[in-house]
Length: 355
Ligand code: F6P
Image (cartoon, rainbow, N blue to C red; front, side, top):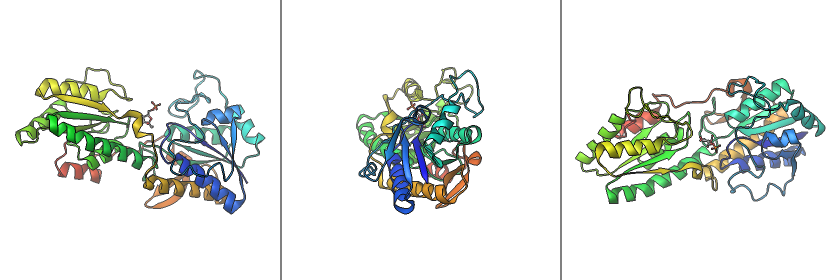
C-alpha cells in the first residue's frame, strides 16, 4: 500500500496528531509507505512531496499547525464554492493532480481538511479518478455528519481563557467587552466559548441579532448591579433587517465586533472595547482532547485506507468513527440549530442571544 496525505484549508491544532497517527499506524500495522504533499493541493499538482517516515512524525503530537503546510482558498481545479467547475478561476490542474498521483503509484490520497478541502477531494475522486479518504478538520466544527472536529476544543479553550481575562478588566472598569471569535457561517465557537467563559450576550450567524436587544441586556445588567458585560460575537454574526446596523456592509470574515462595540457605547453611554481573537484561535499546541481526537481520526483513516471502499470521510458519529460517502459530507456546513440544547442552556442561565 502506498498512501499520500495532505492538509488543506486553514490550519488547526491537532493536524499533526492526525498526520502522525495515519503514518505510524500505516507503517507499524500495514508496512505501507506514506508520502506527504506540501501546502495542500499545491503539493499534489506541483509534485512537491516529503517522505513520511517514523522519525518524521516523531515528537509532533503536541505541536500546533501542520508539518506538511497548508493553503486556504486554493484555485487549482477551477471550482466554484458549490463544487461545480468553472473556467474562469485560473488554470485547471486536474490532469496534473491525476498524473502526480499515478507517478507515485499511490493507492489512496488522505485529504485532511474542512468543507472546502473535502469538496475538492470529492471533485478529484470524480474527475481525476483519485481514490480519496477525507478527514474532517476545522476549528469551526461545522463539518456535516460529524459530531466534533479536532481543533475545535483547542479554539474553544483559547476563547475561554480570553474571556476569563476580559472579565477581570471589564469588571474593574465597568465596561462592555466585545470579543469577536471565528465562525463565518457557523457559531459553534461563539456558543461553546461563550458558555464556557460565561458570556452575557452570544451573537451567532444562525441568529440575526437586534442591536436594541443587546443594549437592553447591557442596561438591564447595569440596573441589577452588574456594571460590566461580555459580548461574544462570531465573525459572521449579522443584524436583523431594519436594525440600525443593517445598513453597514458586513464581511463574513470579521469586523462585526467593532460595529457592535461602537453602537453599544453610543446607545448606552457605557465605555466599550473590542478584542478580535483572530488567528490566535488557530495557533498553539492542541489540547489533550484534540490530541486524542486527532489520533482517533488518523488511525481510523488508515483503517479505512486498508479496509473500506474509497471516497469516504471519517466521521465521528455518537462516539464511533465511521466512514461515510464523501458526497454526504462535503458541501453542506453543519450550523447551530436554534433549538440546540447548549443554546437553550445558555439562555436558561441568563445569557442573551441578542434577540
Ligand atoms: O475555517 C477556519 C477559519 O479559521 C475560519 O474560522 C475563519 O473565518 C477563516 O478560517 C479565516 O481564514 P484565513 O486564515 O484565510 O483568513
